[in-house]
Image (cartoon, rainbow over all chains, first blue to last red; front, top):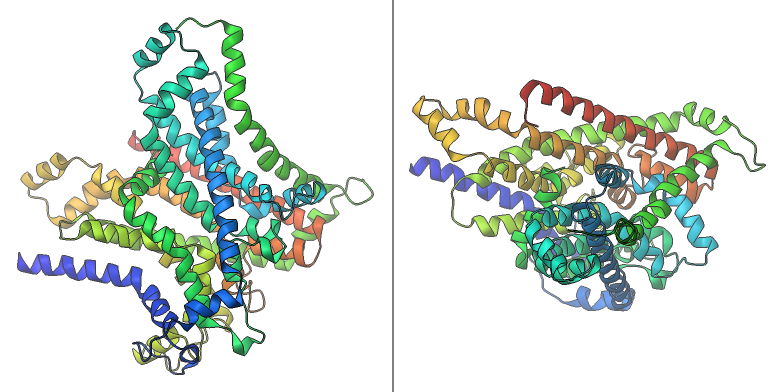
Length: 275
Length: 292
């Protein structure tokens, strides 16, 4: 018995090591003086301690500006995805129209095409409409990207709402719109918050659209902003600062993961296992 | 529920139109427009020149091969390691909740930002990973991950597997937890060994989960962009130039809009073929095993 337990804990320890080892090195170097990153051979344990990277990066790049851009885009897109996704889900599971299978399947199939296969026509469209460097240029495509999973999860949740409840609402004189707003939405808050978290993380992390539709460096999101930092010369690559910035912008995500662990897992598995 | 048909139609239209309009503008239109760019030249004439050029472009075939290789290798590794991790996570131990949170961290990190981190970790002269391999005597000298063509492919595989294994493990874990405990108990009574249970019970019952996970992951890996763009830019040379970065470079750096559109159209075609293939495998398995 001892032996079996030992093996399990050994395995668990290895798994934790697997997940955390790159992060350990990043944390380590983010608190080291900037020369430490060029130490050859590298150090594997702290030799110095400083906040200079965390402070310096705010002078090197407009990190606050990037974070505000990311927040505006991610929040707006999450809101729109939830609104349009729940409306579509209502159409699918309560209004129950002919061809709903086709609708859901096309939604999911279209979601499988890589962004690179459709990015240029969208870029051209935004450029013609003068929408490049406008928050809408990210909010709208993100909303579309979020729709398949969102609609799917909410529709599944709506299906489980007892039909009697919906019928009773209509007997009480609620219109179809009223049933959506006053019955279905309040009832499905757990599902809505789950997909909200998943959508928010996905939008915060998005790269290719943000790289392309926001050419102005002041309009960059954190994900693009940080991955495009470079020193004046290759040899001056400010590693310490880049790593510090990378860790800082992922803190909100890590907090979300800690707080909403159960929800995230249930949302991920609902999205994939039922597919 | 008695509702007039016209009211019903009105509401249906109201509820579905935002989603449908957005999808038409941002999914259907770009795919169709790409096809048009690929077959209509600047003078407005129909031409197969761009398709032809793409089919005779060694760089396109190189990218196709890299993409397929990348998707196969990463997804296979992810499924195998993910399955082992899921079995471990399913065991009873203290700190399961903490472990699950740790598992979500690689998944939640933005790929592009993590790729910056990997770029540092893989640096030959001062990055920890090459030196770790060297000190542990796996290599004779710290390997050049980002400047050697073979090693740079290994680098993108490592980075992708690292990020996605925990996610795959959590999906498989959900499948594992859906297997009724009684089935294991009845096999215990029959005197089955641990391996016997794994091979005759756990794995067959997990086939649906495997297939769905495989499909999602394979299609996602096929579109890989962020990781490569930040970590290697497709280089050195074309060693890690998967299809997405290749299309992107063609259109936005070399300004070959028609050629890029033709490549994008072929990539969309690959996706359709993969979906049909997976659908075919699913129906075949369904006929064989019933419930998938």
